[in-house]
Length: 268
Picture 1 (cartoon, rainbow, N blue to C red):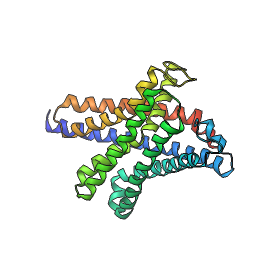
Picture 2 (picture 1 turned 60 degrees about the vertical axis):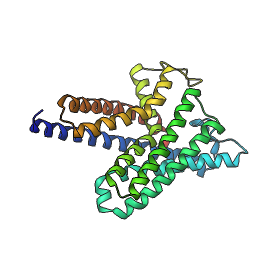
Picture 3 (picture 1 turned 90 degrees about the vertical axis):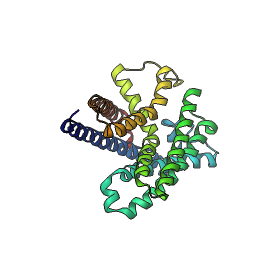
Picture 4 (picture 1 turned 45 degrees about the vertical axis):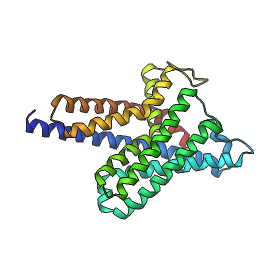
């Protein structure tokens, strides 16, 4: 691979990843807005039972502590989804270092809180899906805490290159639930209905695969990206580009379907 081809490949790779990130952020902010308006309206109007229209066991009458944990989880999810991408954007970090520092501290704190509250929701409060999904969600929560800890560690050591890498890994695993929703709606779209799982029990082979894929695939793509940036292997670079393009297409379809069928209708 010549230097010219290598440079061209890296430019295409960076452009594709930038497009992927932009679309992902827009999709995540739509989702966060939906959570804010749907759950916020139910809370403000005193109709907490409406939580259960989307979140099974979300509200249980008489369980004040449990309901509070769910409420905090939802509130913090909104904050972290809106604020997380701002930590990744280089210009924000460059022109607003103080904001980056304090938003980052808030991000790490919330990451731990939503991980613990997520484990509570699965193992104590109760959740739809089977044991495989519960185990996968628990692994996701542990990964969030691990990546957050390492991102903090390298920031304190002023190793900002390693800090940024671990912060992006944290960003990806924090959004595992969002990736799940996107993949789920993409699957329903291409199959024109329910395939590979029971819609009543929310169990089945497809969901078992998706629940692990929601963080494994984004993490693997990021690892490919890191290696492709330093690689002189033309085939590997363009394979990585192709994988990111395919993932972006899946995201676009999943975001559109989820927004059109679920998020936008429930915002009113």
